[in-house]
Amino acid sequence: MDSHWEITKESTKVPKLHNPLFIEGLPGIGNVGKIAVDFLIEEFNAKKVCSFFSYKFPHSVFVNEENLIEMPKIELYYKKFSGKKTKRDLLLLTGDIQPIDEESCYTFCEEILTIMKQYGSTELITTGGIGLQTMPEKTKVYCTGNDTTLIKEYMKKMGIKENIFGVVGPIIGVSGILLALGKRRNVKGVSLLAETFAHPMYVGIKGAKEILRVLEKKFAFGINIDKMSKEIVELEKELMEKTKEWISEPKSMISAGAQPKKKEVSYIG
Image (cartoon, rainbow, N blue to C red; front, top):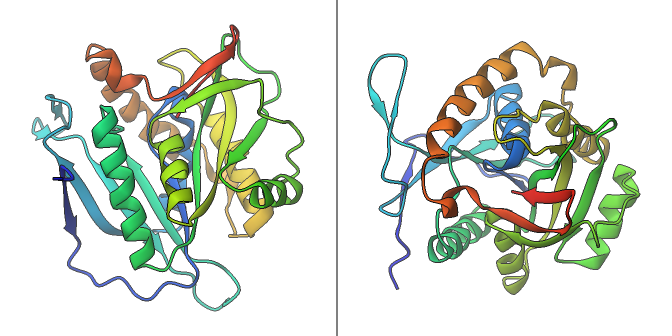
């Protein structure tokens, strides 16, 4: 079956990566995961591995500041750390959109898992926001995944105490399907989900910061979380302008996430 995905590699050869950890951050409610991963890409000056194109992308383009049209994109980056052999390298997935239907979501996740294997990555983290109807006073981070031992390890080392069961229902989109298909391919993974305000125009900086805090607590990458201020806010203003344009698109485009277990709580990847 045709996977629908055209992958364009960068001309620069990717060096051999040390036990790379894959982190996904595609758009969703508050764009929490995307903000966190975009910050990691900027902070570490990560290099592009490849970009993804599909004829199942939305039938819309953006107009950029140079008055030129710009297609939505999904891109994969890498960061190789030098000097410390114990520090894991990174594969970082970001983009303007999520796959827009069930088939393209599944085929995209299969492509990602294949690429992970090619670079020797056997562990993944997906990220996202849990949308609340009111602004959270203190942002909590929840953890789920496809391996019980790994979930317990993350929760213990990151200081996550809250159980996610009963908070959200089914997770829809890449954040969930990547973990599900990963289990079929013996790739262990977790999803880190931070509380955020559910308004479609809200930028989830606080939730993204909390996800970065728990990542730093476990992996000690050297993330300067305090830097997430002016530059990231400017980047996300641009992203939210794009998001406004997508809101008029079919509902399937922006419904990635989980159905709520409680009326006041829902999650979108």
